[in-house]
Amino acid sequence: MMTFDESGYAELGAVFLQLKASDSLVTSGQNFAYDLDIRDYNLWKIETQPVVLVLYDASVRRAYWLHVQEYFATASRRPRKGAKTVRVLVSRQQTVSRRAVARMRTLKNTFFFQLVEGAFDD
Image (tube, rainbow, N blue to C red; front, side, top):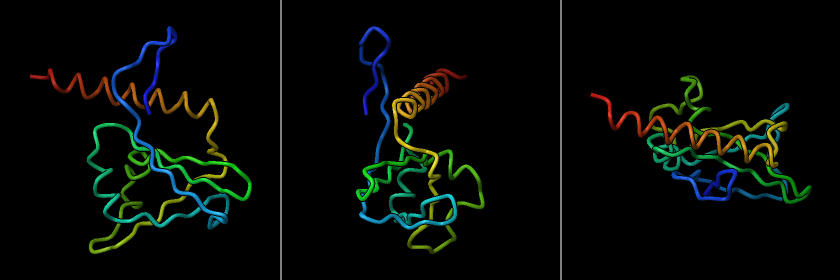
């Protein structure tokens, strides 16, 4: 996803979105559970741009999002060695909205500026 500044100009960097749709998302308490393929996890954990997993519930036409790198920053959420999948829990409160897209833009800008600053560190 490209983002634009307040004047309508394209900004550097991007947000990578992975959309998973279903007619019936699996619930776990106040969350939706999704079993993420370990290959996706392995790719996303080293990505230099923010990765957002979007679960779309087609039955109610609503989407929910999760910032993947932030989620897996907690060690207990990381997969076990040899796992084929890793379960992620996406809050029912985390709906995709204008506010959510603004948050994703902020994440992208934070990632981008950290990357640029790191490139010039001695």
